[in-house]
Length: 246
Image (cartoon, rainbow, N blue to C red; front, side, top):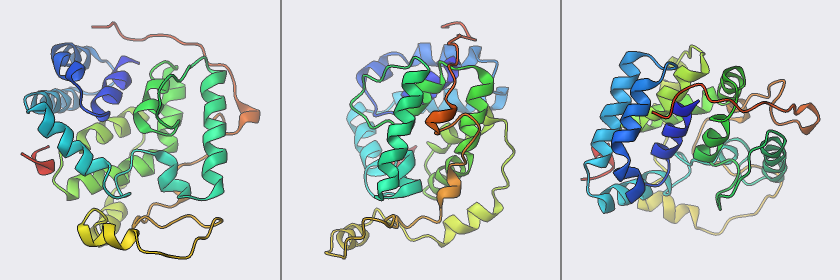
C-alpha cells in the first residue's frame, strides 16, 4: 500500500530528498485508491506547504514538535508503557513480527517508531493494515487532536491513517481529554521533568497524557509472537515560520 509509505516519509524528519520528491509524492497520493478525494487534496496541500518552506525552518519546527516533550512522541510504546519493563518486551515482540513477515529493519530507529511501523505496514495486505492501524486508532486520534489543539497541520497525516483503518472514531471524549492536558513542551515543564525524582521501574512514567494502554489494542495477529503468521508482500498501487505554520 504505497500511500502508507508516503505518509511514513512525510511523518519522518524532513530531508532534502523528501523536498526533491514532492512531485512524486503528490502523484502517489493522487493515484491512491485507499483514501477519499477530500483527504487526497488535504495531503497534497500538506506536501506543498511543507516542501515550500526553507528546509532548516521545517527541520527546526519538526524538532520542536515531536522531540520536545512526550505528548507528541512518535514512539508508540512510549505512550502505552512509558519506561516500564513491558515496553522492552513489546519491542522485542514487534521485531519478531517484522522478521516473521519478511520486513528487514535497517533503520537506527526503535521498532515502535511510527514512520517505521508504517513502512512495515506498507508491505502488507490491506486486511492486515486495517487491523494493525485499528489497534492504534485511539492513539492516532489522540495525537491528531493534540496537533489540532496546537494548530499544527501535521494532524492531516494522522487523520489519513485513521481513515485507512476503516474505523469510525468518536472523538468527543478524546477532544475533552486533550483540552484538559497541560503542555509538556514548555520550558517549565521540561525543567520539572529533569528534576530528581524517585525511580520506579515497574510503573510507566506519566507523560501528561490520558492515553492509557487502551491506545494499543491487542488483535488476533498483533504482538503475540505465538500467533504470528507469514503475510505475503503485495503492492496494490503503482509507483506512480514555526510549528503553527504547519
